[in-house]
Image 1 (cartoon, rainbow, N blue to C red):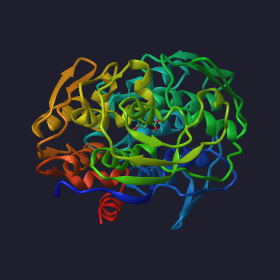
Image 2: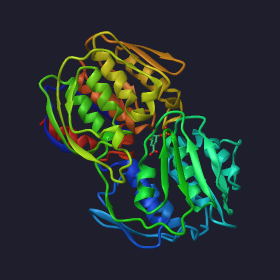
Image 3: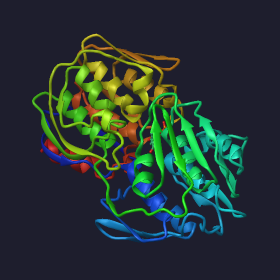
Image 4: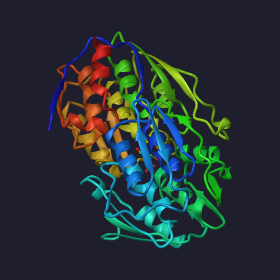
Length: 432
Ligand code: S3P
């Protein structure tokens, strides 16, 4: 494991292009594999998670050419995925583990085994097994809940499914199964979550309807997926944005970041905390869009005040909530996150990791049943933080170090390669 020290820094200056969006890269490759025509995906994320997706798709019969700036996926068609010779390895990628079975469940008479790393083996799959079983497929998971698990493909029928938790991964799994099922499949969300799958399916010619918190897809013959350019990942850029907000004298321009409103909750939370991070964000009333809007984000350092993040906002900023806790340490007053119990089943238990990790650096922070509460003190001492094998925890520790009084040693910094392999290089360029 690599232990990397992030010393208190003077300021971040310059421009950075966010790495390609992980969620959109996974979906683009998957929908391309479900298509019959070749699809060119420009700016595909070349990181551990999304390489796992390309390899998983090869295992089920897609041909994938990797070029420097793009990939070409020649798919099998919607109902012609091949049964692989052995288990499909999803690595560390929860999105792959939850989305791929939606497609595989519709492969009549074929059997697929999925497995992954130790983190994946502790993340629940019963949440996709339940709706897929209602559609007629069968999933046998270890202890009923975990990988390795087996998907028995069959002819699926449409359902209307009320999601017990707000999860874009589960919603997407059901929608992908729904495209190949007989009839119209609907998913009802408790609160809105990221809608990349819906946008991309609509762009591929699928009948997609949205009414309030219900999204429905109609049966498709084949997908007509178009070539696309993946936008920058706001969830990765968020680490640079937070660093620029916290380190005095900083001024940063993040180029071409995806600002789909179902992903940009973090920027709205930042605004409430008094940070200056401006861009042209998407208006929620415009979400019939097929495309993924992008913007540059201009960020300056400045004083912060605490805020309360309510449950309805949580899915719109789910991966950035650890950064909200860090920002809360530097804010005046209390910062509270509610309704975020899903953080317990991410790449690590992010409530425990954030609370123990930041407390170890000098923060006043408490875990609650569904989130955390931070009392800001205007700064952070520093120390050592364990990434717990979680990419976002590693990058959180790095940003904490830059803004701290004494610096932070991050144990397990290599985890950042799961979503942002160029993180350390980008940071050192901005600090130079
Ligand atoms: C993702 C959805 C979120 C997020 C994850 C990626 C996606 O998970 O935390 O990093 O690409 O759909 P849930 O929807 O399960 O909360």
